[in-house]
Amino acid sequence: MLDLFDKIAEATAHIRHHWEREPVAGIILGTGLGNFVEHLEVEAAIDYGDIPHFPTSTAISHRGRLVCGMLNGVPVVVMEGRFHQYEGYSMKQITLPVRVMKALGAGTLLVTQAVGGMNPYYKPGDVMVIDDHINLMGDNPLVGINDDRLGCRFPDMSAPYDQELIGVGLEIARRQNFVAHRGVMVAVTGPNLETRAEYRFLRAIGCDVVGMSTVPEVIVAVHCGLRVFGVSVITDMCLPDALEEAVVDHIIANANSAQPKLTALVEGVVAHLCSQQLG
Amino acid sequence: MSGFEIVESAAARLRKHWPHRPTVAIVLGSGLGELADQFDEPVQVDYSEIPGFVLSTAIGHRGRLVFGHYAGEPVVAMQGRFHLYEGHKASVAALPIRVMHALGAQALVVSNAAGGLNPNYRVGELMVIDDHINFMFRGPLVGLNAPEWGQRFPDMSAPYDKRLADAAIAAARRGDFVCHRGVYVGMLGPTYETRAEYRMARGMGGDVVGMSTVPEVIVARQLGMRVFGVSVVTNACSPDQLGTTSGEAVVEVANREAERLATLVTAVVESAK
Image (cartoon, each protein chain N blue to C red):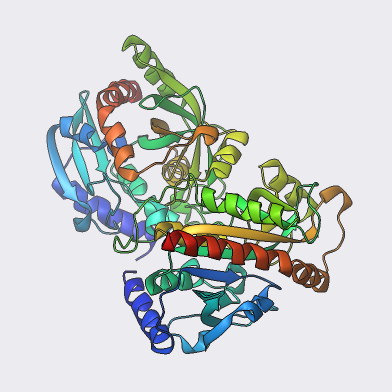
């Protein structure tokens, strides 16, 4: 269990060999959001398969490489494709890259994901800044003996998503005149989508959107002391009493259509972090 | 060795340390371990000496069994328990219950430190557990069921013994301190809950939330033991005015409430004779 510390060091050393800068932020790109890298001045791109202890990404539309470079002059490290519990990975495997980002020097994690919208005021193609989450994945990446070098035994979760960065994100959306909600995301294991009864249940327990990722990474980010900014892209509506069959191609198309908004939010938050660091 | 053989060999080992039959088994939760320091003629056995016992890594947990007499009754107590967030299987976490039952215990007293969801609860107050919700996504009875273990499908209509609960609440009244009666939600942990998760747990009927107890109680019920459970509210989890929580703060509050806990446990041990 305590070998995680060494795995992080080995993965970090490998990346350091290709890229020497200290990233301001780590960014995880979810389903259909992979084109974001076009906005990056790429300095190194490393396939997950080449990084020691990294799993390989099998999900549709996830490319599976770590891209290091400059976003408008700010050094960032970007996961193009992430790992999911439904691929059969353990939560420790899924979240290793977050710990590596921290070890590389990142102070903030930006995480994006495609989700189903349950709040009837949301529309496909809208974005939601994550205010809070509910973990219904039935597991937790911190189960096992705690390595105190990595974080504390019982991390507080009263505000996993940085309140200041939420405000920054919403302000960017207002200025650029697009809709950005603020809400609660619930993570389930998947890979099947939910039944109508499950959507009713998830809505009733207080959730606005549902996805199959992000929560493990955010828990680990909080554990290792990273600030977190999360954005969900609503790719389909999950209204149990008017439920339409989910089509993966539509989901990806909606995610792609939201890319300009997502890019604006990520660029804006990274710029804010950079100005804070300089200020 | 089968699970049953492990239990038998642990019980045989422990009988060599302490020849009496305990009537009550007691599980002492985070920061509540000092109750066993009040036992008469105590005998301590470290978990590392007991077959099938894993090591307790949690904060405020010492990791040993203490035998002795409490309120005049022969009892055995766990100073430190096993949690699922430590990476143990639920069946392993609950194994000590089977061992204490094999030694003769017919009643189980479980205590824990818990976060208060019910807005009427205050930090430092006690809650007698009336019922629980298993939200740990795991259960100690999953797998092949050996007939010696008990029933395949134990009834859970009233896992917590009403008479023992009544005895404890009456003792709290006599002692003039607040003692609630409510529903415990067992979560996996080790993260504390988010505000949204607290709202969910409250919305589905929980009064307090914790990371233990449920696997132990399920196993005790399969064994037919009478169960008494008590939570010490160590932090308030009102989602709309949530402060931060740390393991150290939880243990500190639990330590402060040792005397009241002892009052309840004394009443329950006397009632369980």
